[in-house]
Length: 580
Image (tube, rainbow, N blue to C red; front, side, top):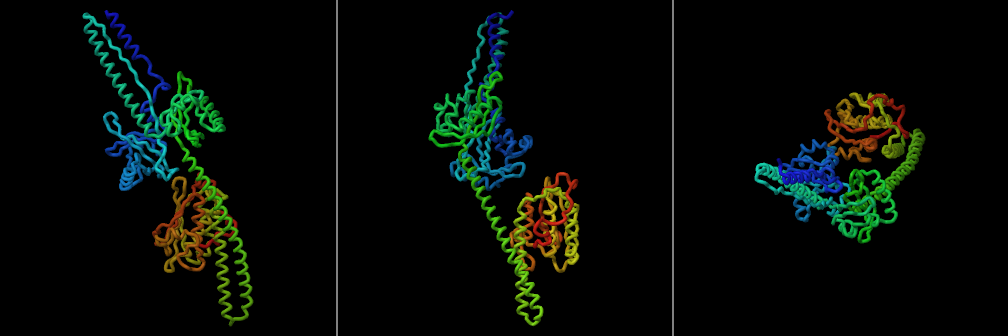
């Protein structure tokens, strides 16, 4: 029979072990909880080989790689800098006394983002890993080296009491020994648990110090229950001046009304929030902007407040306001320049038309004077230059119109548009003896008139720059690339040296002085393509000429329901009048 004293001791120990752990509302979060829930991008990296051992959901969202993919990658696959550039950045950070590094990281989409990285080694189950906190600084790119980094601080104490079984009796020696062994095992478990929790708390405090935020907790009436020491740096008030007061006490009156309404709604919803921004007044009387992220604190299922982190985003808001101001000014300037060019082109068109008209009238007058060669020569020059001026003015008008949004959105049957354009250019193609071939072309999400204008300019360009010793051969092909269609128009003409392939897309750029070449055609093509969100470039042709490569948005349903070829060209003139 078990001695009553021993039984009481065992029951007391069982009661201690059975006591439930404090709820999340009262306990500080563990390192794992912080790692998984924090909005900062975090990576655990093996310093020996750069392997990414673990990543938090914020890293998965930022890099746009699946979590499983991230855990199989190395940091070298993400870092877009060369080894020499990385070494240069390390030397620069050391010379400037910085505790962080600025790198360029590549996302899953291929986009390059400029980031700030802070790393610190920690022991995980006997293995040294680097905890790296990654901050995207691409939108800001400020001239100074100060940025906000997440800081949080977890202050918690663990006070565990372990009772010892003491009462013994000789006739229960073996049982007490067994009880002592059980007690020893339980104590070892408790010590290990306490040590792990303390390690987790230490890591969380270290992350908080490195993050650059201040940590807060407020009750349902909006009063601060806790504020970390970082508040003195961010808000200009030490924690003692904040606890017991509300954030609304440090805001302009109109902003305080707005934030109170938002806070009441957040309490009713009881859900985490991110990126809430509000205006405030710091301890030095300056207007500041704060961004808040928070989680609801619950006790017995009821929301009793919020805890979270705040950071100063005043410089970011100023940069955003300046950017908006500059964009608005640039838009006004662009609109004014476009209007000026349009009006200028219109006013030049009428004098050039009159010059051509009067030159033709003079030609009929001097037709009866065959010996007057000087007058005929002068008249030829006047008429030729007047025609060239009219062509230039018309091309400028086409160029301005090409940058405007396409009023037709497709889908357009590219095969039908090409066939229609070949019929229109039949005489020119036959006169040059040209052979035009084409692969099946996917439907595109642009209007048929715009597509025909692009194809005409490129076909006309291929005819204009053909080689005299070869029969002109032009081949058109296209392939779908995701939601785009990449077209290739290749010829066997004179070609363009690589050094000039970007230059020929400039307005009025001509590589030779042959008649009829205004240097605007390829500029119009690129402008039309870019207006549809694409690009245009020149590549080598297998036949010795060039390939003009451009892309347009693909039609969602293929050729089903595609628009028929146009019956005419956009307002202004037919595509056949666009000079290349």
